[in-house]
Image (cartoon, rainbow, N blue to C red; front, side, top):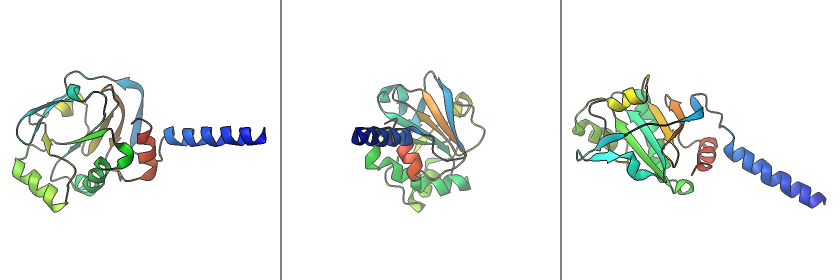
Amino acid sequence: MKFLIIFIYLITSCYSYAIEKPNIENLVINKNLKTYDEIVFKDENQKNIDLADFKGKLLILNFWATWCVPCREEMPSLDLLQSDFRLNNIKIFPINIGQEDLSKSVIFFKELKIKNLNIYYDPAVTLAKKFSLRGIPTTILLNKEGKEFARVIGSIDFGNKEFINWLSSYN
């Protein structure tokens, strides 16, 4: 009987740790999920990317610009997050809203040795308005149904173990 109680305790404590909010000050978890209509932006070939095509995946939209110093600091950890084996059902979209030409973004990615991410754009900056961005970087986290369940306002280390454990509970 003691073994059973200890076993149940260990299982529930591990499970609750995984879904517990990580100790990241600028992570905001929504009490009510937010739904958005038509989230469309461009890839580096000017092709439209529609998030409706990615239902069933955990999505991360990271809004950034080449002139943004905190964006530069967090981008390498975001790049590593895309290749993290614990998050095999994740798709990250780093979306440049700086209204810059492609060459500046390509140089930015090369300087930071970004290998796992592609460059995306919101040329009309419609998504910044749609998501009510107040600054960059801002990262929007969408669940498998495409609903916003959290956001990061400002930069973080996407390699933070607490963050990855928490995020993997949505994977």
